[in-house]
Amino acid sequence: MDKRKIVIVVFFLILMVAAGMGMKFYQVQSTPVYEVLDNLHVLYDGEEISALYDDGEKLWVGLKTGIVTIDRSTGELLEVIDEDITLIYASEIAESSDGLIWCGHNDGVSAYTKNGEKKITLAAPQIPEGRVNTILAVEDGIWIGCMKGAAFLINDNGEWKVEKILTPENGLREECVSIIRQNGTEIWFGMYLCQDKGGLCILDGEEWSYIGMDEGLAHRYINSLVFSDENTCLAGVGHTMYGGLNLLKKTEEGWRVVKTWTAETGLPGNKVRYLYQTSGGSMFITTEMDGLVICGKAPDETTDTITGQYLVEENGLSDNEVKCMLESDSCYWLGGKMGLTRMDKQP
Image 1: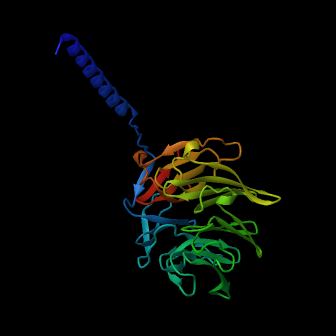
Image 2 (image 1 turned 180 degrees about the vertical axis):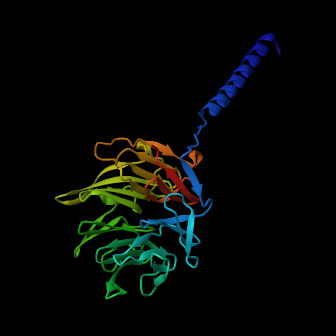
Image 3 (image 1 turned 60 degrees about the vertical axis):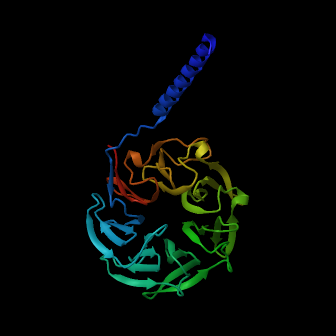
């Protein structure tokens, strides 16, 4: 090989090595560096947390292995309420007007006194089949959303009974009800694991209205709903890598989707898992796999890009999926797929 060819080969080898070193340097420099926050503390590490409720004296925590109560400030275990039920996915805990604490679980719904005594258990065929995903306490009863429909329970002279069952045959668009919320005279039902329209079914008195992807929702699966007022709703929607956050407004023609945010406009990830607005007005937006963002206020029509404090497991969360949340006097409680995070409020 003549000297000219040797020089050319050496030159290209040097370029390749330099390029490789540059790429390695870029990869090292672009690796995120996370700050572990000292106000995040993980309890029940590795335990799936599916539901939280504050009765004013203690927190009720729905674990995969049952229900316990803990101190609402420290998280210290107070009492094991029930080890005979299983809670996973989107189960909830709520309190009825007579002071009973209702918990949805894989085999139905159970109600307890505040002292932990089990008073009621309802299961199919009394209520629709499958896991109870959501509970809504209203003035005149309890709504529960199940894998095969929804049911309304009333207190008839001290005895709780099923007054109404809803299915696709009498109003719902799909069987699986993931969330139920009240807005004024309206009861909102969010659909999940649906094959057709899915979305939202809104019952106002005897009248039904529906909002789906054809009307602008980012996905047909509904995970969370928060109302800023009777005319404004935020809906967290999606499945796995797909979905977003929708803003809905009530107009003279009915509810309309007026804005959508996704990972391209600031969300940590596309599937919005849970929404929680604090007493100070901040909004927690959590996702399925990508952590959460804390916004200074709820996004509205003037918000083009979601901004705020982004948190992931590397910052000190129990994991990247926060499924439920509560605020107590000194901290926030974040229930995740792999533990319970206590987030102390900053002074």
